[in-house]
Image (cartoon, rainbow, N blue to C red; front, side):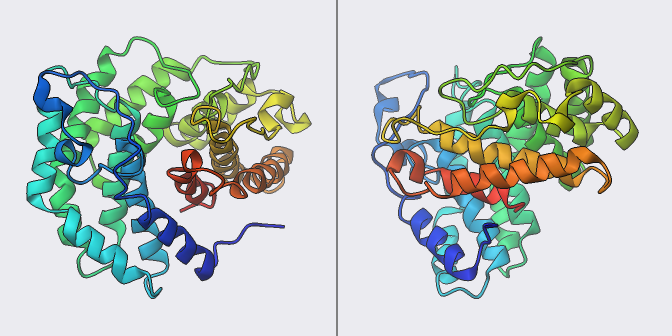
Length: 336
């Protein structure tokens, strides 16, 4: 049965997300400490994005709320989202978030995953039709500009793509950065993304599908394919895609089409596999929609997108290790 995001389900997701987006603990953070002052509580260092277990999950929790506010503006829960954004997205708070990134030794903080999600959030606010949305987007603009420039400066230095299935995956970040560059007419960012995508992946062929890793929430192969669909022209992409996965129509490599099941959802890293099902559903769906209806690969992609969606959508609240982030990937899988 196809999963449909009804108003009732949207309201449930909003309530769940509001329940953790300002939940300060437990909190996880990997960062260079420059002094004792950096040992302050999360909300002191990150006045906006201190909840949802870690910085990047808090950012994409705001993204989820923005997208659901756009799609379901008349829900009873919508005013709570507006109140949160009004309270948190202030110039003073964003300046303090920027201070954290500007401190010595912090150039790699949340690179590239958190950077990409911040751009995705800003893009959502730019698209949002709400009387307050322009103000929220303008307030977040300095941080988005900083991270856009950070991408532009970083990508030429990255000699090889990171092909892991976790936060450092290069292709995932470039997908979001590419979309943001197009939305904001940022030619420098678009050029940087396109150059690195082609340098990293254009010659890839005969992908063997040696995945997933035991802690993956991203598919290196499907993320790469989705990126190339975006950066290449249609004809060039179809030629590349045929060489990258030449037996896709036969459902091979089989590991790419098989939903996975975590052994322990209370273990934050093992619980990543629920997210892998959802991120695969997102990529499979987008790739399938980009093919002609008579292309036999389209049906394979779309049917497997549905399988992965069903596998991932039933475990959003099993444990906080998944609850604080999985719903965002559900929205991606549904095309939001």
